[in-house]
Each structure stands twice: as structure tokens, then as C-alpha cells.
Image 1: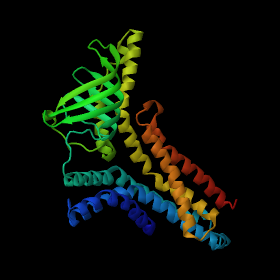
Image 2: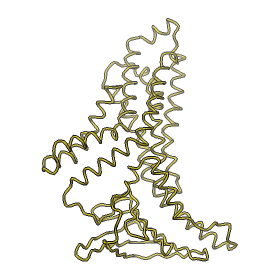
Image 3: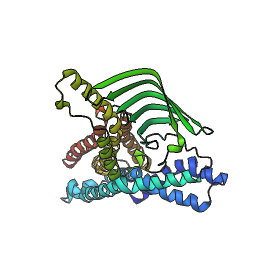
Length: 370
């Protein structure tokens, strides 16, 4: 397992090193010491994925060889059951779950934030007037911004909360442009929909083709105060969720007698939930992925026995296939973070239930020799 985790760590590091660190090193923007520091900060973040992948690969390799060499037959002839043999591996997977939880929820995000800050400080000509994707922006007093994607100023799935007017604005597309001379940031939202909660509790809805907004860059005060949501620890996400829910609180629906007004408040509550759902998604992702090691070990043991092969490449191929299946659920959950009606935060738990259930059945059958 140590060897497979080391191999996957190296492979996953290569992409980030070639994409960012090596480019800065060759251009002379950072020295060798800073580059090594950046690599060191990336390792714990990479372990989030390398640890369960390494455990799964090691399990498949060991039990594939174990079965191919007829050692399982010899163990059964000696009166030793398969469950007794695999118990240390299952206990090791539970220990890896605890280690993975610490890396997922605390160490990995902290190292990722430190890495991003290190790379950002090393870049020259960094544009301060931008809206980083996947991050709640509170740089401008009275506003909270969130953009799912930011491709060179072209925004996707933008949400703006205007606290002064108690208004939430949503748009599938947007564009930002910074005027360095006038110290202004212009944001245009296209096909925007807004809902405003009045002082009497009623809701006013509107939609426009284009919604321009202009902000003074001199009022931006907290540029590097908080990391991206995907880079927050579990406890930071919890505090962020509580803070957002407190700021976006709506009047209780039961306090109104008007059926129409209740319907409007329910609709407004759904729009406010769109703003907090990405936080719930990240919280559930960190916790759910911490249990991947146990599911991988549970399904890797009987699959390795059934494959009955000594070749390393067969075990690695199966491990990569199972990992791809598992991560496909993660990608689906992330892609649906802007649709809370689908409860995307619960999707992250599906692969754990599926892998553990299938693994338990296969292990039971293998123990009975079926």
C-alpha cells in the first residue's frame, strides 16, 4: 500500500508541477526553494485521492496473487476462513478512513490554501479586480457574489445578494470588466432574475435581459480574507454556512396569512438555498470521501480473488476502473451544486453505499466458496 500510494502521489503531482510550478521556475518568477515548498504543500492535498486509490490497488494486487498461487485453498484446508484472513486488511482500511478524514477535512484544504497563496504571490501582474470562481466574494460592502465559473471574465451561474435592498439576483451568464483608470469594476448579468423581499414580508419578482452593475474598486477591502469553498476545511465550511444562513434569513412562512405571499416566500427561500447549496456540497464531499477506503477494501478483496491473476497491470487496470466509477458520482454531485432541488450533497454518499453493499455480498460469496 505504501508503494502504490507513493506511485499515485507522484503521478497526481506531475500534472500540477508541469502546469504551474515548472512554468514559474523556468520563467524565473520563483526560486528552487519556493518550488520545492510548493510541491511539499501539494502532497497532502494529493493524498486525498492517492490514499484510497493506493489502498484499492494494493488490495487487488495482493489478493489476486494470493488466489492465483492457491494460497486461499491452502488456508481453507487448514481451517482458516477468508473472513479471518481479511480482518487485518479491513481494520487497516478503517484506520485509513480516519487518516483520510483528517486529510480531507483539515490538512488537505489548509495545504491547498497555502499552496494557492504561495503561487498567487509569485505571479506577476495578478489582476486584483476579478471574481474567483467557486468563492463567496464580500469585497464590496453590501454585496455577496458567487460565480460557478470565471473564464477570463466570462461568468457562468452567477448569484448576487444585495443586502441593502434584500434582493437576490441570479443569472446564467455574466461578464466583468475592470477599468484601472477610473478604479471601477463593471459586471453585466444576462437573462437575470431577481427577487426582493419587502419590509412587509412580500416578495417582488423581476427578470431583465441585461442587468449592469458598477462598483468602486477602492471599496474592496478583503481580497485574500477567505479561501475558495472547495479549499475550506470542514469547520470553516460549517461557520460559512451558519453565517450565510443568518444573513439570508427570511420571515417565517407561517407568519403570513396570504396564500400568495406564502408561495412567494417559499420561492424566495429556494433562491436563497441556491446560494448555500455549494457549501453543503463541499461539506458532504469531504465527509463522504473519507469513507472511500473502507468501500474500496471491501470490494477489492473479493474482486482480487475472482480475477485470479498475478499480473500487476490487471490489478492496476481494475483499480483505475473502479476509481473512475467512484469519482463519476463526485463529478455529478459537483456539477449539480447549483440545483439544490436534486439534493446533490446526498449524491456523494451513493458510491460508498454501493461499493460497501456490493463488496459485502461478494465477500460473503467468496467466503462460502460460491
